[in-house]
Length: 124
Image 1 (tube, helix red, strand yellow):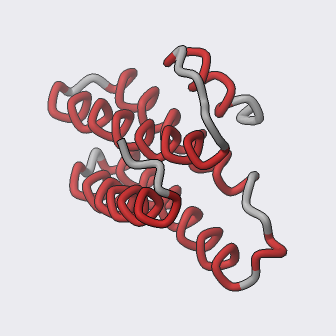
Image 2: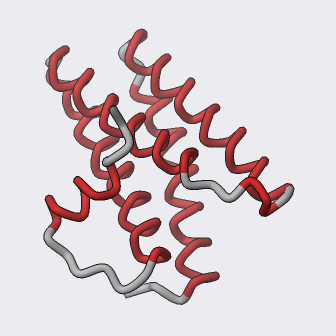
């Protein structure tokens, strides 16, 4: 179900991808956009959109877990645990209509995006 998330995001954005590093950057950015939409849906009381946008974020995070190179050692294991925790927070946010949990997830991914850009030199 989630296997083609990266491809779908690429197709939707119609952006030429220079490298796998750029794709990861786009996935992080997608999570941030989807979380912002989920927060808006919570504020608006729109259950359908809340579920939709949170599910989109979860799908992207699931894709990030799927592409982890577990031979990468402790960093990959750490990211797997972190990503799974972020999914848990999003599920709680969905269940409890809790914007603060979405903010927590967004803050983590903002930090990851910044660090990713610094280490891969894909910053705009």
